[in-house]
Amino acid sequence: MTLDRRSFLKLLAAGAAGAGAAGLPMIGHAAEIMPKKGRRVVVVGGGYGGSIAAKYIRMLDKSIEVVLIEKNKQFISCPFSNHLLAGFIKDLSTLSFSYDKLASNHGIKMVYDEVTAIDATAKTVMTKGGSIAYDRLVVSPGVDFRTEEIEGYDAKTPDIMPHAWKAGPQTILLRKQLEAMKDGGTVVLTAPLAPFRCPPGPYERAAMVAHYLKTSKPKSKLILLDANPDIVSKGPLFRKGWETHYAGIIEYRKAAKVTAVNTKAMSVMVEGIDEVKGDVINVIPAQRATALMASAGLIGEDKKWCPINATTFESTIHKNIHVIGDSCNAGAMPKSGYSANSEAKVCATNIVAAMNGKELVELSGINTCYSYLTHDEAISVAGVYTVKDGAIVGVPNSGGVSPIDYSAAKLEAPYAHSWLKNILTEMST
Amino acid sequence: MKMKLSTLAFAVGALAMSSTTFAAPPSAEMLSFACAGCHGTNGGSAGLTMPSLASQSKSSIVEAMTKFKSGERPSTIMGRLAKGYSDEQITAMAEFFAKQKLHVTNQKVDKAKVAKAAKIQEKACGRCHLEDGKDGKDDTPVMASQWLEYLQIQMSLYESGKRKMPEKMAEKVKETSKEDLDALMHFYAAQK
Image (tube, rainbow over all chains, first blue to last red):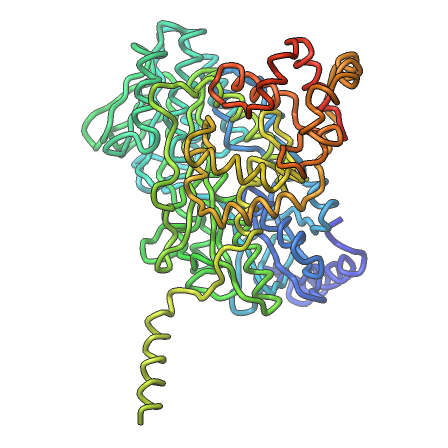
């Protein structure tokens, strides 16, 4: 339960009084839920970053109360969601979990609600259900889309041209569109300018969709319009994988930024000049930190991402607010699930140290990320990170991608499955 | 005057450093937590191909990481990662994982094979892999409760010659039949 009886009654009373007195909605004066007694960290967002931050703070210090606020009762993983498009999985159940075990194993208090505002001065977050006070706040909100940069893109566009860049209904919609497409059709996939969530994601998706086309609709093709000057991650490996398995199916166009969409004509405009038509169009817009972060004044001078301290992940703009995962600017660490997991642990360690007046500990981070080319071949990128002159950098002479000869690809596919199993288990238990 | 100058110098230094945070070098926890995304919280793996590091012997982890780093032991991703750590950091991580409780996997194994191997394991492997593979004191890896699939991958790497067996192990494996080796892996996977 998220509310005990007393705070629930208090909320009811406050609501009744507020409505009675002025007869106006209570926006801006939301009643406090879960009044804070001891030391408390509030975590916003239960994804790859937030779930781990909540868990590790409790693992490191049981005397700190942790409240995890999450919109959805079910988590659905973005990593491996491309497998639905390929048809390797029939639904998203293996990528989903509920928060019950995580909460009960670690004594994390779950609040299923949407955070509407952060008041850095009052050290309070506002949710639809009321306000919650914190001593320290960890925000791991993911990304929002910069749809305003695409002409003709409106609220209904994703229903016709799904982004499928947040796993769930959008992924299912894209799969259904692929299933409904005639053999001989054209799929258009558009990748935005970096940095975006999951750098190898669009290229893995191209392989996964092409796999479906090759096996089920062999007369069809896929055009990948990439806004970037070249493949952002694992470039030579993807290129070789596409040539080996999907020659004649995948057409890759670099430096092809989508500037407009037309859902009626089912086309996209490249650099304002070239119109490209498709039967199924998967537009992944460019990204930035979420609107919540913008309204809280947590976004930096680049107007896109949240600047943070490389040791604590504390915002360099607002004290006591820590930003982890895709929304923060973590230097050399990519916007990936594993990075968010690793950042969460660094952040948790140093929040607990700071709250106990202990010495902070320098970051040591890891990223590992697998991409599939076929159902039993995968490639990977890995990195180890440290801090130099206040910035997160890769440890020299470490990390890198799989060998170009694919000698590891068959072994990396089952390793990737274990990666998923372990990281989701870590988040959910 | 001298005092004042040095105070001033310190203050200027502090200002220039304001974007950096004073922090201790990465602790054993800080280093080891990062591994858990793939190897499970505190090194207890839930993924069939990933070894549990929890309660693994310190010397085995140090040896594995050192050989991953040099390329002597084949790997997919571990070689690339191991190169990111100093020998001192590797030792700190090994100590952290060695201290954790054995991760009991309760996996599906062939009971007949486990029973068969129980009779031969002492002679075949037990001189080095002590206490049914639970004790890593003698510089040998703890194998109890490791995932069967992980053990099978490692055995196939040994058989192909990609991973080099220690001499004593090579002698023992030579005189053990394929069926018995298979049964032995079921035996160790089943230990709790």
